[in-house]
Length: 377
Image (tube, rainbow, N blue to C red):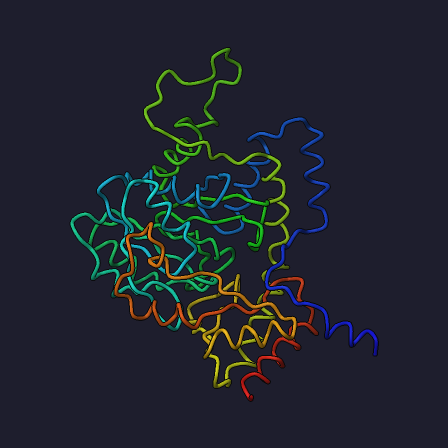
């Protein structure tokens, strides 16, 4: 009885970090090797990511935002350009556009998936549009067939912000294995983490060659003449960043990739149970997961009536819930509020419930029963 009472009083966190047991040992090996800068571990991480997710080319960098910035740079996005993007995302998606001197143009989203609406994208294209940015929100892929058709019809490249989408699939194929440029995050609460880091995937060898330069001062580190007293090339014609990944971070990422199926399976179990148990609630509405999608359940957003009341109810019962992202146009850096009716509705009622690998079956049961009691009240 004491154990049961303790479990019921235990706080259930909204976030947690998946760090496999051998991570510390692998990091220690790197430290003892005395080579902790970009090296063999970084190369091995890129190789493992490519092999696991059928990605033709990939580049590693020190965070997901750097991945977005380098991707925009390789597309030549700069002052005076516009990038059509989603307003319902973490601000990094769109501050990366501002950092290039360009302007994010917000398309509206779909209420049922929280992903960018292809019809709204098409309506926002102008002569100044340089690229399209989409986000696979909550690891539930966007309608990429429609978005890519818009891109082809208008000769516009597409950057997929896939910070949420490690291991997600669209029509049976991993996110990252198709498309122009796909950016992943290895930030602390992502399914694969190295504390912080990023991966840029591409199917284009040309983009790949240039991206390697953009993440390190305009120089491809792999072509440096290591046996020379002057290893830099004679010419540097790209203004690159300092965004390379070090081997300590890479070692963490390697272990995460090796164990990703464990994390994906546990999240699938929890996500599918939520969908089964909560589908008939009247005060909350679940996202739509199209049959062609295999979501990774990076987060689990729901629409809920009277969000503040729901949040108070759950937190009083020591179950943490959280508003993860707000509509970006509410922040003055993006130029002010825009007419985005679906985004406005989602911004009022979306909230996250816990989903991570540290949740036990008892935790999940408690979350479900608490939500059902709220729904019946």
